[in-house]
Image (tube, rainbow, N blue to C red; front, side, top):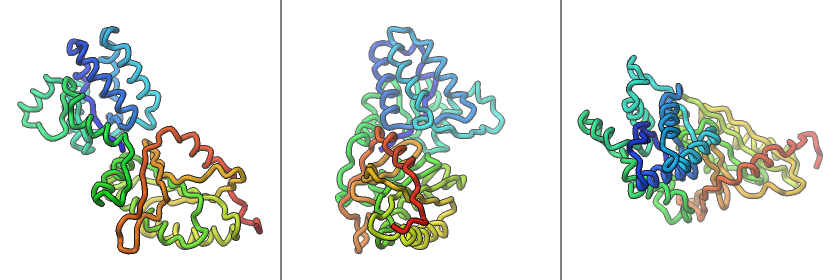
Length: 324
């Protein structure tokens, strides 16, 4: 699904560039736009220095690079994560590599992308660890191979180890401050199986979410549609009693739900939406068999469906006083 990276601005110094280095740099930024998040400091020190270097790269190497970088900035709400950082009073602006390294280790990002000179410095300071990637070797790095793999359809979750499915979900929700669940059929019958699936995802967020676990920041929204056959008030009560109240008792965040009117039946598929990803869930959130194993289901990255989900959210709320 998603990968996360911190960029060392010196990796984009103009004197590093030749034709091959340009390709590595373009692949990096293009990949982050597709299914990655760029982690920067809250004061934008890394981002500003990165921008300064990218715009200083000669046009023959930097034209496409600037386009990809501007796409990241244009989509910063979905592609960029800002983290508050303190380095014990150091002048952060003069310690860009230390700042980048601190962000990588503090957030457990997948990669820190560095220049050759920065790698030498980290090695001499005994700060070499997994996930430090040379931009000059980016195309062949494990990080890029993983990114391409996560971009593809994951396959049925019941054929994968549970740890692998958990990793897939964690990657999708780790840096978000809000989770939205979409399923048009909630509360029409028993909600227990639905609640079990939602609680499983929220438990991973509670344990591994950067903001949700460390800072207690988070909100949950659940969207469904009015039952065409049953009572709207009965549906509301079932959802509130059997789903929302138990989730609020189990987790520290606000949990809101919305029942929508959908006369044109545009709301059909199920989704998880975060600030950085949209995951289409093939058969819904009834994830488990009675033996605790996963049912046949598919989780697919669908970044292009944000406008559809906005339409679903903007459907009129169902009238609780309606008798139909």
